[in-house]
Image 1 (cartoon, one colour):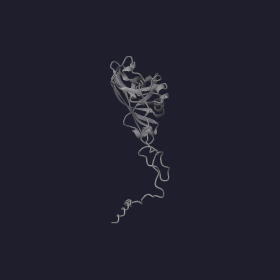
Image 2 (image 1 turned 180 degrees about the horizontal axis):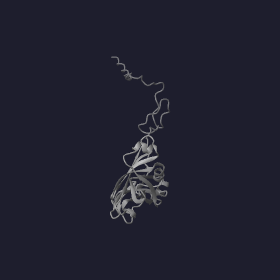
Image 3 (image 1 turned 135 degrees about the vertical axis):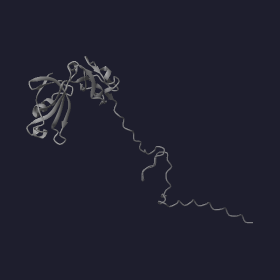
Image 4 (image 1 turned 180 degrees about the vertical axis):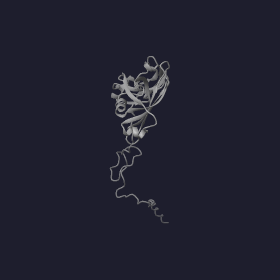
Length: 235
């Protein structure tokens, strides 16, 4: 897909703040045989940014001349989130470009339907190649991805470019859901369990002595009375 944006060369005046008040965004175009401060229409650049990725190739029209370019850096206002500056890179026609291409997932993984959790571990892949071969986005179909399965960088099929990201790097995976830790509660009748106050004793347990009451807190239980001695025989 082709994208076009118009720009005008700018000097030291007006300053960047004045340009923004006029509805323009200051920027710089640099690269092969060019290093030019520019200004672009704010509405035009915002519409463009809503459609492209960082690896999209743009045709920049500057002073009637068309130049191929990539967006290298965008600065945003921290309060309004509006674009306040943009840098564009014009590559040499006979030299490869090194750039990060975003990853986009397609489909609903079957492992997710089975209760698994989708984890995206890498959302960009670095590639190097001629500008015309740089993909705008790398699409990965995850429809058949099951629990425990993953997609690695070396499984991507990219033509005309060299992949610089390590091949064993994981892009996306489906992991099994974590099991909740079982909570063991004391159950009456189970060895070691203490019945609640007033609860019936467990089957097979010796009943408490009739009328016996537990000692008060901190009070020691009185020892049992010793049996009476037998009467001595009369001489």
